[in-house]
Structures are given as structure tokens and as C-alpha cells.
Length: 307
Ligand code: SAH
Image 1 (cartoon, rainbow, N blue to C red):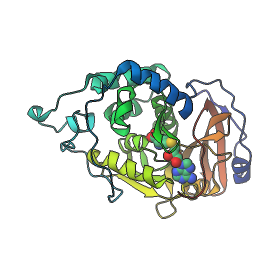
Image 2 (cartoon, rainbow, N blue to C red):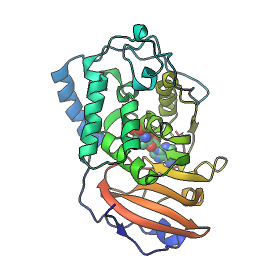
Image 3 (tube, helix red, strand yellow):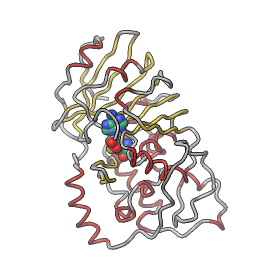
């Protein structure tokens, strides 16, 4: 990684208080929900009503999906890779060509071309059916490289940035316990669950937390737990984490999250307001953190409290 190191080691206060200016030009295309919404309207008109699958019922649940298995929601008309290994060939439903595995493979190939090299991350991206995390009206666009609206002024992150952040956090190693701040519709949580032993994800907007549960339920990911709460406080009861990812940008990395990072653990977060960059924080010791500034990015804001 050709990233610029800041002074090593940094005291906690310097990591918390002083976001750095980005040093690299953007690799990802910055997207805003508003821009995307406008683009989507145009694309939707062009593509027409392409998404044939119905959504399975939303609603309450345990917040924990089950294990990957062959039991697809009967209301969906697509197959997906997490099920493929175990599904009986005769039971395979018809695929919508606009949300097919071939389209997903093409998305992964694009992400690889943009510079993501970690085969484990690319494999996880290929395994998760992104269209199942989006509204039917947008599902035909699920595999373009853009963030897209999911309601409540929030977005599903761009595939490239999801992959890039996980690649940086993973650093080629095994991930035991990972925390994600900002579940949104649950897409990145599903990708994380393919490559970490245990994944915890927190969302502060109740209807999105419920949406993520509904989206994730058919995937039956037994190692993923969803929490409704303020992610800026982390999840002390499950800490320490050897990886933490923030899917929303604050002016600094919340102190609670730095303290819930295991020694040797890696946290990746967008930092900034209008101009944002990815920051990698590594915990070096009990009171020592190091920080690196990576590429520019654009995320929705990190906000305190719950709604
Ligand atoms: N991880 C998602 C991205 C969701 S967008 C994906 O896979 O596409 C970021 C999400 O962060 C939003 O849903 C927003 O509500 C949430 N968020 C912002 N501040 C938060 C906080 N303090 N705690 C938990 N979630 C937060």
C-alpha cells in the first residue's frame, strides 16, 4: 500500500482531535445520495421495470441471521451465491439477467481493476447478492459502481469502497471479531460475514436496522449480529475488535471505538465533512495508536444518538 504514514506512534489525542488532509487523489468516484437519486431516475427510465423478484417480508426478528443454507425466501426469484453450493440444481429458480451472477462477476472484475487485490475480499463481494439489499425499483442497478439511496437520506455504499475498506482492514490476515458502524441496508455486513469469524453491526436509524434484518434473514448468516444503537459508543460488551469499519464520516474517529480496538487491530473510517478521506488507525499498544491517511471518499455523516 502506498499510503503516507503519519508520525508513529501517535498519542490517542492526536488521532481523535486532528483529522488530516487527504494526500491522494480520489480513486473512487465520490457519490452523493442526491446525485445518485437523480442518476437513478434516468437509469430507471432507461431500464424500465427490470427487477422481477419480490422482496421477502420486513419486520421484527432476533437481529441475527442464520447460517448460509439452501432455503431461499420463496418470494425471491433469483439464486444467489451463498446458496449455490448447497442448492439442489432442480430447485434453482429462474434468474433475472440484470441481477444475475454474471453481472455480479462483472462488478467484481471492475472493482479489481480499480485496484482491490485481496482475493478473499473479491470472493466475498462475488458471494453477496447486492440486489437483495436494494429497493426493487433500483435492483437492476445493484451492480453498477455507485452508492444508491436506501431511504432515510442514507445510501448503500459503492462496491469499490466497501471492498477497499475491508481490504485495508484485513491487510491479508484472518479477522476474528469485526465491528461495523452504520449497518444501513446490511450489504457490507453481509460481505464482512463472509470473511470474519464474528461480525457485529450497529445502526442508529430504527427503520434501517429493521430493513437490514429483513434483507439479511434469507441469507442466514449465523456469525452476524445486528444492533440498534449509537455506533459512536461502539459495543463494549463485545470488544475488543480486531477490525472496526465506519460506514459514515465524522470529523474524528470516536474515542470509544479506538478504545474498543484490540492491540494490533485496525480501524478504517471516513473522516471529514465535505472533503473526506479514509483513515486507517492501528492500535499499537494500550495507549498507542498510529494513523495513516488513505484516499478521498464520500460518505453520509456519522451522527450521534438514535432515531
Ligand atoms: N454499511 C452500509 C452503508 C450505510 S450508509 C452499506 O453496506 O451500504 C451509513 C449508515 O450509517 C447510515 O445508515 C446511517 O444511519 C448510519 N449511521 C450514521 N451515524 C451512525 C451512528 N452513530 N451509529 C450507527 N449508525 C450510524
